[in-house]
Length: 329
Image (cartoon, rainbow, N blue to C red; front, side, top):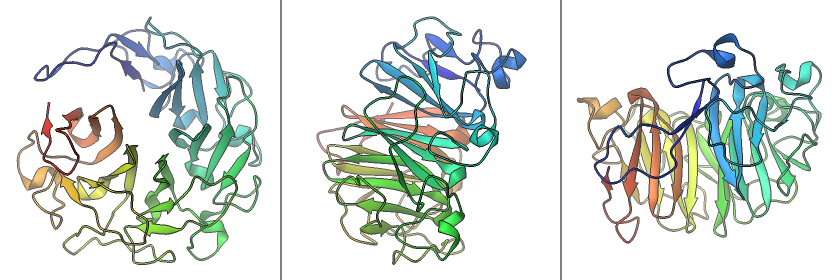
């Protein structure tokens, strides 16, 4: 129930570098939801994503059903947020503000992204993605919704069959000039739009499935470059896509922007081949293994993976191009 900040990136081989700042707790040794019972004003309950945009820090405080925001990145531990989205004030923590879903409310917001001048939130419990034009620095309603016919709807897969315009469990977002992606974890797929949507509309293609109306979990068979199981994370760097294929204990990478359904990944990290999916390759934990990789970030030639089952963050430094082997720190 905390967010850790490092003021500089640890160098190669500097494993175990301590963090400089902790948020959500008064110090580095305290644990527990709501700052160990001190209250939600400065505490978290299962923070799942963090994002910095133009010096503003945003944290998806998922089980408080809100986005916590700091207008400048804090330099002191325990600093309370300056504003929240999804709740009327920093003390409120009810899903959907204790009422019906609408453009002001959130229910388990797990993912955050800044794409094409919009703040995007994966409002997971409401089975939708919300977008704000510009960066909100105070509570205000979302400007657009994906995955539902209106702001007042939140049924799984729109209350009907799985389709190109519905979500079961949207968990993460990523995008750039090469496309816009939503990791629809509950349907075992990543939905892709060739351009960033400006209103609710169907996706153009799906990764991890053979069609836009398919949500099959490939559980008891060898995996491949075209399958996904509970993809919880996604990231884009220079139009290249990385997906945390969480239940398959691997990271899949597309060196070129995918544009068609079932487009195969070009590289796998964490497994010896595209067919493998074992936790830590069914061996001891190592520098090239994962157990339930949950979150992923990719920027400036560095790929960071929250390897949640192994209680660590792994960092790779690119060597010229993603299609070449990278070495973990």
